[in-house]
View 1 (spheres, rainbow, N blue to C red):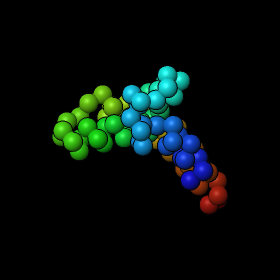
View 2: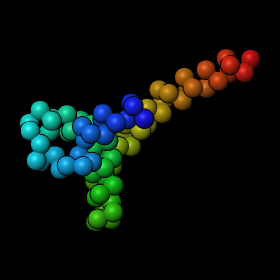
View 3: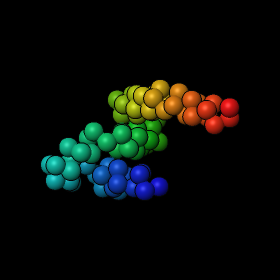
View 4: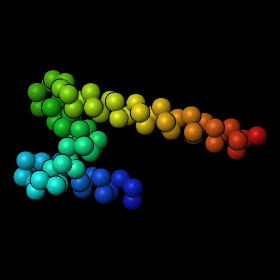
Length: 80
């Protein structure tokens, strides 16, 4: 929970990115949570998939590719 709160507040979840100061807007534009929120809004409002959906899928895939083997390795070491 403590890991997810700062990125959530540095995203466009609560405030549109267009209303932020330039440094915050730059952080918001590279934040994966912003891409997830924007993709969800686009899908729910217009029933279309845009580039934010692709960025979200890419981020989730990279996280899965990195952490799935590490988790399985830790589990196998613990069960042996």
